[in-house]
Amino acid sequence: MTSEIRRLWSVRGGDATAPLSDEEIIASLAAAEPVLRVNFVASVDGAATHHGRSGGLSDDADKRHFELLRRVCDVVLVGAGTVRVEGYGAMRVSDESAQWRVEHGMPEHPVFAIVSGSLDLDPGSEIFTDAPVRPIVFTTSRGAERATLFEDVADVVVAGSELVHGPTIVSALRERGLGGILCEGGPHLFGSLVADGAVDELFLTVSPTLEGGDGVRILAGELAASVPLALESVLASHSTLLLRYRLP
Ligand SMILES: NC(=O)c1ccc[n+]([C@@H]2O[C@H](COP(=O)([O-])OP(=O)(O)OC[C@H]3O[C@@H](n4cnc5c(N)ncnc54)[C@H](OP(=O)(O)O)[C@@H]3O)[C@@H](O)[C@H]2O)c1
Image 1 (spheres, rainbow, N blue to C red):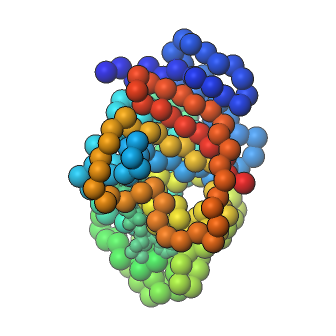
Image 2 (image 1 turned 90 degrees about the vertical axis):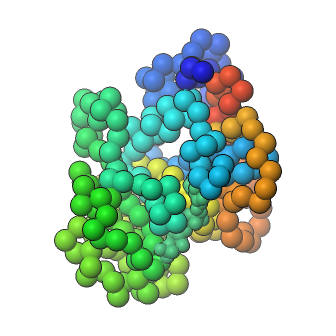
């Protein structure tokens, strides 16, 4: 299976039958303004995991697109549940991405920002000890009690009392010059960011499988009302769809 990606449709036009190069995909990701993007993969029947993790749903095309989204971002934002389950290490892009970033005047690697209300994270984990850039942890007043444990390895930012507040995350990152925010989930973080009206774009890879079961969906928690999405583009690789939506 190759990772050839073709554009089936885009709101901006430019439908192409030829496979897209990395540079063409990157060009489509250029943003005139700071943007908070969220990236997920799900099966056709809506499962966000296969045997408890997202990796089983991902193919080469999704991995390639995932890496290109990282390549152009300033900061990767992830919820603590995903960090624990998906076994995140220190935030490093591929060598090719690092080279591209340096050539385009960006730091070699994006900043890693983690959201944890409890701050129940291990400051001795390689996420922190091996980080090429000092990570940021967003927490609540509750988690703030553990903040001193992290003072050597991360910046801890209190951004809410019960829950971390999405717009506070966005403004704190923008104040640091980190306007290009890529959120890699998970469902509870996505739910709270959507409820807070903080998300600009959703990238959803639809993996061509049916998973059944009662696995998590990409968004957890209640929303006050349905959120309408505007389709921006449809890319495809064999039977895999890579959808891009804009939120209101
Ligand atoms: N298909 C995909 O693309 C994809 C992507 C990511 C994750 N996943 C899957 O999703 C599952 C994990 O789901 P999840 O919902 O637990 O993930 P999650 O949203 O990453 O983690 C939830 C935890 O993150 C923290 N958190 C998130 N939002 C918060 C907020 N607004 N305020 C304070 N704390 C907040 C809390 O951490 P504390 O407990 O530390 O307070 C909370 O318990 C895993 O099975 C993973 O594989 C799938």
